[in-house]
Length: 136
Image (tube, rainbow, N blue to C red):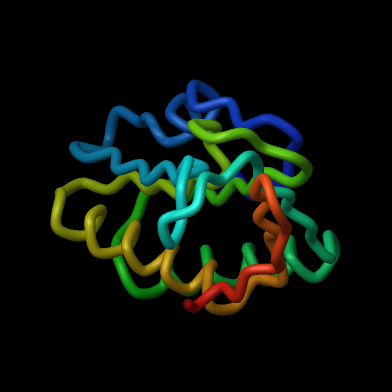
């Protein structure tokens, strides 16, 4: 498993980790910063994490996915710090022999990560900033 909190996400690193000769499917989900929310222009997002707990929970979610589906490899990577629109901020990915397991596991990983991992984001607009609940 590749589990990391980083300043900058390297998509090539995630793919290189997941790629395997015994896997017929590699599935990557890349979450990026949107340039608007609720009709307001977003200037940037700041991500903060409780690192030790976040990494432990990311490993737990990845382990659950490995138990539920026949996966070859799993990657869960989240960025922290200030990020501008268009910047990748989260990557979850899996490799497996067949595509059904990879699609299902990838969806599970991003949903569980957003529900359970202690990473917070703050949105900055021209006129104010707000902490965002993970589940609007």
